[in-house]
Image 1 (tube, rainbow, N blue to C red):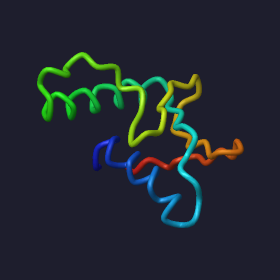
Image 2: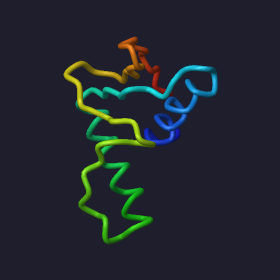
Image 3: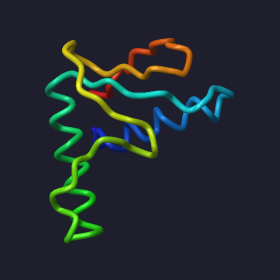
Image 4: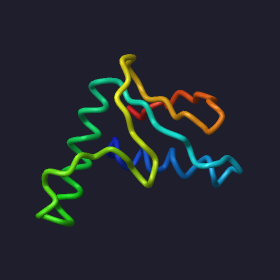
Amino acid sequence: MAGLIDFLVYAIYAGPRSGHLMPARIELGPDLFRQFQREHREALTAMLPEADNMYPGSLAGVPVVEAETPGAVLVRLGGARVALALPE
């Protein structure tokens, strides 16, 4: 499976490519949120070693927040919620 960051970047830009606006936010369940934070910090540290303790609160300008429910949801402007089916 590609990394969670790659998947989320694809999900963020797939909407605008098909005529939708950029998402308002992405909600991740607790396990996915921790994975996102870990992958984000690892990628950032690889590019900017001095940035090893930055809080990863967004991706491509889209806020990524922790949700109580498992899974991943993309929330569009206007409130429409789109469940993201994560690859196996």
